[in-house]
Structures are given as C-alpha cells and as structure tokens.
Image (tube, rainbow, N blue to C red; front, side, top):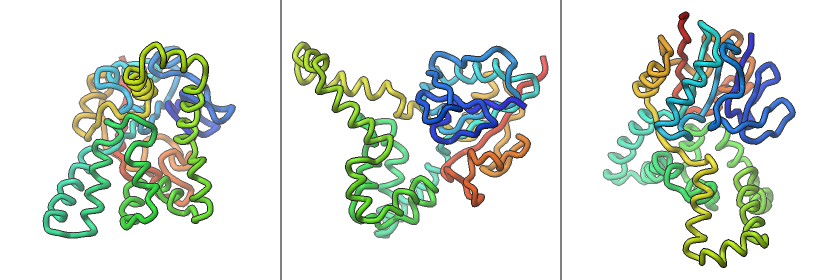
Length: 279
C-alpha cells in the first residue's frame, strides 16, 4: 500500500510518504501544501493528516480536501484528525458552571479551556498565551492539561528545574522560531524596512508575517461540520473513529495517533475516516 502523511511535523514513519513545510528527517519531503499536493492523481491508498486542516481558512480547506481526493486511489481511505470543537465546547460550559459556583480547581481549568478555544486563532507571536501559561512557575491543573494534550504536555511537565531554566533559552521549535525572527530583525534588510515603515507599521508587518506562517488556527470543526466538508469534497461514508482504531491495516504499529504505550498522542482530537468512491 502507498501511504501519504501530510503536514507530518515530527510524527512520521518510514513506511509512509511524509510531507511537511519543514523537514527534520531525510524521509520527510519539504513542500508547502498551500500550493497543492505534489503527486499525480490516484497515487495513494491512504491519505492521513493530523491537526493540519484547521490551519487552512474555511475556503482553503475545501480545496485542500479536493487535492486529497485527487491523489487517492478509488476506494482509498482518508483519515483526518482535528481538535474536537464539540468536546472543547462541552468542557468550556462545564468549566463555566463550576467556576461560577466558586470551584477553585475548575477556575484554573476554565482559564485553560478558554486558551484552547481562542489563543491559537488570535495570537500574534509564536506560542501565544498558551506558552505563557505553560511557563508559569506553578501550574495547579497539570493533570487536566495532560488529559487534554497528552504526551506533549507530559514532556513539558517532566522537565526538572534545571532543565526548565535552560529551556527558557531553548524551548524547541517555538523558541527557535522566535530566535530566528530576532536575528532577521537585526539584519540590515530588516533595519532598512523598519526605517522606511516606521515602528508602528513595521510591528504590523511582523504580526502579518507571523500570522501567514501557518501556526494559527483559521477554523475549527466538530463531527458534523467535518463530515459535511468531506462529503462536499467527494468522499463518502464519513465515520468517527478513535486514536487506536482505523480501517487502515496495521494502523497502531505506525504510532501516528498513538504512542508506543497505546495511549492517544493528542487526546483532544476528533478522528474521522472516509472513502473515495468508485467512479
């Protein structure tokens, strides 16, 4: 079988064709998916992408799924994973009710779930308010955040005080992006632009650059809206599944939606699979 993993980030497998905007491994092809999918029609048996389509605008998402449809073979499977808007909304309402009742624990959870709802859509700098929250000296609702973000949150919380002080200068991809922006701002080219535009317009330019880089969320989906979008792109039989369940043969051995211990990599997710019908 030919398997395509789009927007893979650090989650890739050598049995798959892995594509991302940046490459951290020789088995990851560099390509900007906003320019389409760089393969011929009816090439793959499976197309998979996780926490990717919400980074496209609502209008762009339809065109992107049409591209997924194009490169899939007939009767091929598409598997789409996104943040689950319905579940986030349910938790938000529960957190709001408990917070209004004066429940201190849920007041912290309310603060976090509000960040899940809005921060990655409105932030103007890498990491946004979520990163600020996770960098606090004391986080009283670590268990709740781990339940929402799984392995990603655990990796952050497992850092000891020493590594935490060091990590302020190196917090992986997010802070490397910040450092990159700072270096660019020091260049002669950037200084010239700042002088030409003035501080206010230059600041607006920097925000625009960031928001076009792909980190922000431009839309969110529940099981109804995502299934409807898949149907409009030509797919049939959209079905909700789980991190460790799939019509894709030997799914869990790839550890794309699961970790080796069998736990979900992104527990906050909605998982949907659909089929490309015969002509």
